[in-house]
Length: 156
Length: 198
Image (cartoon, rainbow over all chains, first blue to last red; front, side):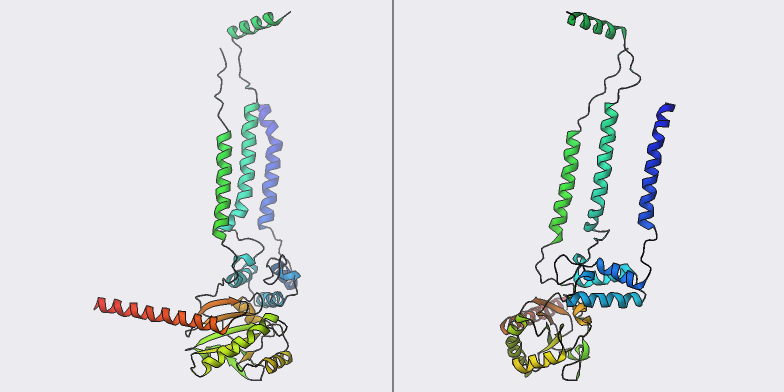
């Protein structure tokens, strides 16, 4: 039992590291520093209304230019990135956002892969546990007799 | 003593169930996302964003001064072939309603220089306010995705319809008629309700 606990420690450490990395990635300070960098990051998360498959940051279409100007103006006015994205989504719809929202039906995009991963890991754990030979198996005398008889009958 | 033989639970149905749940969720997402019919607008039924600015003839325009009449807000560019094609239709519509005073047209310049726009109107006719939008802010507030694009505003300033592509005078008149008939029916129903209540 003690060996089993010792064998689990590396896994617990790995899981803790993964959890820590996820937390840092989710809430860590990763925002761009300058206004221009923020404007670029926000523009990269908005789809160009006039073009296919391009972000506002990468397009020279008139509407993309207008959105870039508005994004910069709103950053200067002190709005947060999410407030600016919400404003654009309020005009062009949620489809205008290249990063799907985390709530509502679209939030399933974030939830389903995690749920699938957790389900798959859980399934593997269940299967692996079933494959383990039970440690507390005790062979009875009757079983030993049966095995001995079977061996004798198969010997040439 | 013989070790207890654990009953083997069947995993297959659980996996199939999980796959079914995921598929059902995916179908739900696809079913509720709606088709991209190109004429949806978040503005419909809401107050139209304001339009106030300089016009190409050096005057000023303010949409707020046009309450009480239908307004066709037309976004166009001089380089846009469908805009050139629809222009005579706008001229016909505007002339037909100018005397009646029940509807007006305002054009908003989309990515064209003022001198190009003046030349465009000199060549193609049209005598209504043409508002400059140098930073594209008005186009942005209306959610314009391309030109030509038009919005029909009700006399109270709400957005009734968004039209992508060229308009025709007949289609605009049909829309006005539909809205007016709907208003009359709504008033009639309101009168009946009041009569029943009294």
